[in-house]
Image (tube, rainbow, N blue to C red; front, top):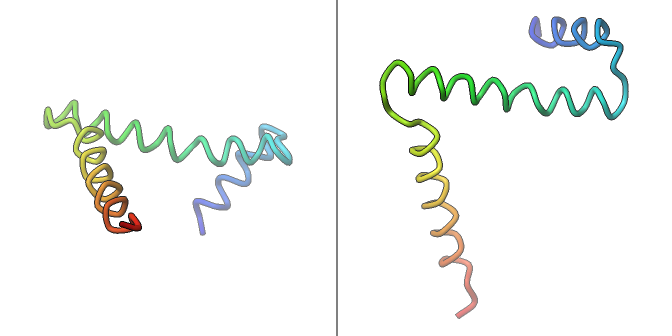
Length: 70
């Protein structure tokens, strides 16, 4: 709830409305996620993006083979 209030004030500060506000709203979590992944890699040396990609690929491939009609 507090994050939403801060974000709304941020959008008003930028005077964004309509599509521009939606683009900013969709972009901020991506930037935040990349920042977290980079920070995790910098601290631990583990490439979190690679690990997450591997898990997502495994899930997608499993669904693909499970849903094939043959």
